[in-house]
Amino acid sequence: MRYNHFAMGTKQKQIIIIGAGPGGLTAGMILSHRGFNVKIFEKDTLVGGRNKPIQLDGYTFDTGPTFLNLSFILEEMFTEVGKKATDYLEFKPLDPFYSLVFYDKTIYPTTDRTRMREQISKLFPGNEQGLDRYYKTEEKRFRALFPCLQKDYSSLSAFIDPIFLKAMPQVGLGKSLMGNLAGYFNNEALQLCFTFQSKYLGMSPWKCPALFSILSFMEHFYGINHVTGGLNAISEAMAKVIKSSGGEINTGLAVKELIIKDKSVSGVILQDNTKVYSDDVIINADFAYAMTSLIPEGILKKYSAAKLERKKYSCSTFMIYLGVKKQYPLLHHNIFFAQNYRANVDDIFSTLKLSKDISFYVQNACVTDKTLAPQGKSTLYILVPVPNNFSNINWKEEKSGFREHVLDQVIRRAKLTDLRQNIEVEKVITPNDWEHDYNVYHAAEFNFAHNIPQMLYWRPHNKFEELDHCYLVGGGTHPGSGLPTIYESARITSNLLCKKYGIPFKRPSSLDEK
Image (tube, rainbow, N blue to C red; front, side):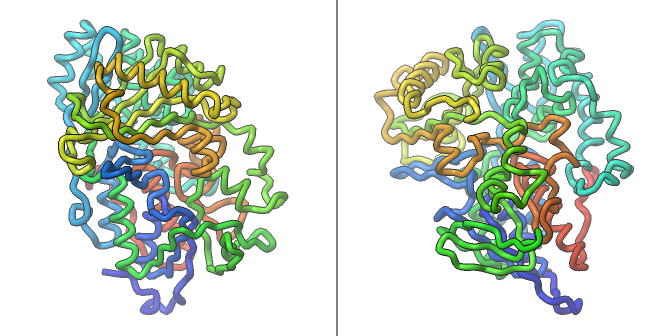
């Protein structure tokens, strides 16, 4: 049932959302359902942001995210607005959910604990008992920390909340992710099987906080899903729900600037200089880009351009999207580790140079989903983590040669010997493209790094602390990057707005209720 502001004697409030990425769309769904007058402005002609489709001559690719984990969070977002996600989306569980390919062995992670134990016993003998400790300890950690991802940290008083105090013993302060995994497994390659996700948090697993071992646990406990049509179909589904609730989505209309007086936001100025006023504005644009491009210089103090330059950021990615004239016998998701993984990680985050010995990811989605390519053909999505643009790498010079190097490595390691002659369509996205075409600050594709000084209260607040009537959603605010956490950021922000205006809402359900 749709909320009714007027029944409660409350004037209908106008909300502008900048950007139709996953966070903006989720907030748009929730707020339009609850009776707010929602207007979304998206510079692109398609919704989704980095979750939009790339369509090339009958081939469809996801631009960015390809893993859907914690799918119950997405389903909850639809439940929030009185809908069933399964009425809009077809979920396909993947098992095994990916292959992890080293130079001398391959492991196939699965939610089947017996099969996982058998694989570890065969490939990493003597470590299988550690798996049982991993499941037990990390489930406890996950259950303690998960509620912290569902509440806002707009004030320091949030830290004396019982939810956070209960979670504190599970944070693992002073211990790294690799250090934590070493408590379960004595083989470094096996440890890496449970830590590679940290790269997308903007951190080396040797420096990433121990608490992020919950990322691999979430996959092993809940599994990974694909959505028919690609994860971009989620964005399309959300857009339909928003429109059905009376929300307005304006594509091809970029926001040039916020309207600000006395540090209070009252609307936006579009690229054509049209002014659109509202009661509140939600920013779903890349956070640092928005602070440096949508807000006049001199207004911000905590997040001034100079201070943003000194923050820690995630890596970037070099992307190759290929439509090929045949189908290959790879799994849906495939991760290939560099021979010297630590040196590769150091190149990405410390020395900021391109590695010759690269790690990379290949998605072969058509093995699961035939809708993405013409009959008998398939899509290959290739992602290589690389330094962000603080590196000053000249991508105009490097693009062609690096593309050849990446294809050489994919052909050799994935054994796709005839790949080049089967390429029918192709698109490449470099860090330069992420920065200049997609408005990603310094091409840090996964936003701020998730180190302790940039998490919870120390991450930009959902109710933005420097401007009144201004809220944030997306990877640059709490709880952080990744689709499930971005959805949660939108729910937190939506609930804060409802609390402000006296609109009732239900608290998120606990893990025990899911």
